[in-house]
Image (cartoon, rainbow, N blue to C red; front, side, top):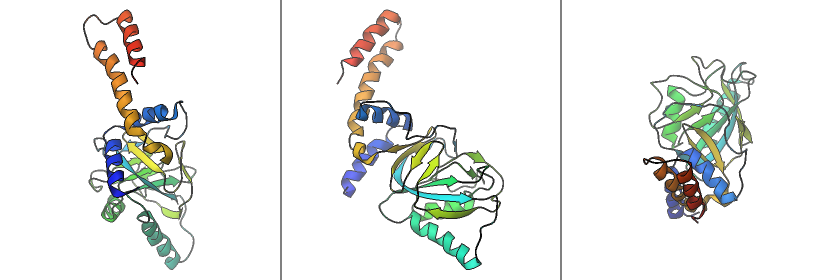
Length: 234
């Protein structure tokens, strides 16, 4: 996808919230689905931030026990993650699965790491793990986290580039992700270009119902007619 086409598409995707994207994907597919999106609450550090739209850079972490290996090996892993997260086609989003039996024991995301990632050009993060340093996180780097906690414990990156699962949303490297305060969803690459048209169609269909529902005299008969009129919009 060339940069001009990508910008136009991403601008359209960012213009609506994640629930609308989920609805538009149903319209583009022609069927409903119960997969491809997060299904548990995620704490948004910037609830009023615009949606994040970017390509997944996946990683796995643990925090309950110390990392194994020499100091040099640990440093190599830490720097290796940073090199990976900004590699390839952008913009990128960090999608991090905490593998501890109690995810969120230690937070990878705080003032320093959010500032480093934002400085590297990463859009934000979605994780089932925890976040800390509320009020000191890098502005303009939204994080959707499974928990808020006080400590980083022994948090360390164990690997990157593999499939991860964030509360029911399976993500692989390079997946297109849409995320906001509601959660996150994977946009299949073959459906992405169809979404602007689907979004417009859904808005026109819903407008018919919303308009009459806000007027005096609204009732069941009016609703029946509105449903019929909405279904006739193509």
